[in-house]
Length: 223
Length: 83
View (tube, chains in turn blue, yellow):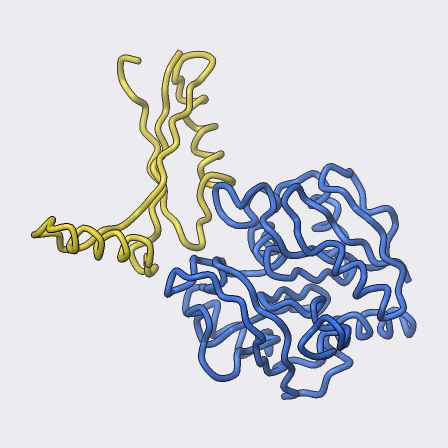
C-alpha cells in the first residue's frame, strides 16, 4: 500500500509521517507541493509544520498549492486523506473540512503529551481504535484553536463527525474541546495532535499513534 | 496604475486573543481610555492598469478566496485615490 506524504516548503514532520507509514507496514511515497498529481498513491498524509511560513494564515497558501488540487479531487473521490496539525489547517483552508484554526486562546505555543478520546472509530484513519478509547500523543502548535459557527458545530456533533476530543484541560481554547474532525464520508480526517510522533516507544510517549496508519492500511487491504 | 486596499478583520463574534494582548500592553504602558483592540491585516495591491470595475471585482475575488478566510474573517475592498 502506497501512502503519499506531501512536503510543502516549511513542512517539519514529513519524515516522521513517512516513518510512521513504514512502521505500520506501508510504503511511503514522497509528494512535493508543486506536483500536479499524487503519483497514484492509495492515501495521502498532509504533515505538520509551518507550510509557506504560515504566512497569511496557517495552511492558507498550502491549501492552494498545485498538489492540493489533485489531493482535493482524490479526497472527493473517496481516497483517505489525513491532515496532522498544519495538515489539518491545510484541509480546512482547502475546504475539505469545515471550520478554521485561530491562535491559541492563551497565545502560547503548546508542546505536551496530550490525552485524546476517539469519538469516531469508524473513519478510514481510526478503525483500529475502540469507540471512546483514550490515547496519548504529542501536541505542539500555536494556531490550534478550532472554531466554526454554532450551526456547523451542531452538525458535526449530530453526524458523529467530531473524531477526537481533548480529555482534561483544553490546551488551546478549541470549541467543544474538538481535537479532530472528519468529513461526512469518513475518508478525510484532520487533527491538531501528532499521532506520527507516537509510533515507537523509543521516541514517543506511547505507540498510541500507530493505529492511524494501521487503520488505513487495514481498510485498503479489505477494499 | 491604481492601488486597491483590502482590509481583513476577524468577524466580530470571533475572539481575538492577539488584540486582547495588545490592549493589555497598552493599558500597562499607561495608554488610558482604550476600551478594546481588534487586530487585522491590510493588503495594498498595486494594479498594472486602472481600477476598472472588472479589476476591482477581480481583487474582491482574491480577497474572498485567498486574502481572507470567510469562516473567521470579513474584508473590505476600496480603491485608493490619487496614487
